Image (cartoon, rainbow, N blue to C red):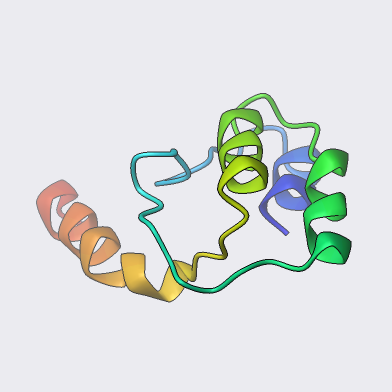
Amino acid sequence: MADKILQRYPGAQAWHFTEEEYGPSKVVIPDSRLKKLEQVISPALAPLAGAIRQRREAFYQESLVPRLLLDLQRSGI
């Protein structure tokens, strides 16, 4: 989904989409879903897509909400 947004809106930026942000998980990704990661074309997402393919583990963005809120508070938004 993030890749489609970055493609559709040229000014959009990936926010907290780094390999470091996506911690280990115990949820194994099936091959059919891993295959979809090969279609990621945004340079900002390519390292993360590669790491997820290598780890073969899912990550849920909902776990990033506290960090996202902290960023918003620090920026004054």
